[in-house]
Image (cartoon, rainbow, N blue to C red; front, side):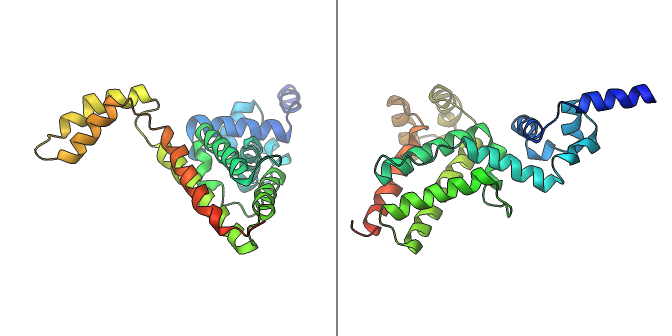
Length: 224
């Protein structure tokens, strides 16, 4: 028993909150957040389950820290450019980060104890919009609209049965088109054939929609 106790102390000695949270994110990336438990996390770290509670008091606190790590990966809107370019870069970065961490999409707005990176991100976004001339309420509308677009697209993208333009083309030609006889589905058949001929890339849809949202918001800000 003493030997086992010494081994447990030794195995827990390398732990830190950062290491615990990073490993939790790795597990969620592989298995989804439903596959994450304190015992599963302790096993991955080679530590005792109870020792994790020295660093995170509960599963909710762990999720707060995990979401904060995700926010830390998202690029803040740069200050040295116009608001549309700044929010475009921030939105593109958010989409890329959520593609790496799809489990986080449904948790980004659910945390009631946001961490420092989460708050820093929200402050930077609000500052960008306010400095661009958006009144407080309109800046809130703009922020909600942009986040809804980014999260919604990320959620839809995560469920698609293809990842690349080539995979889309293979699926469209081999799976979708045979199910679309032109006499029954003339417009869907026409669309599928035209997209294949144009080497259509679904990944471009995000930028297309984002630019429309940004352009629609421009007239709603106050004049400089």
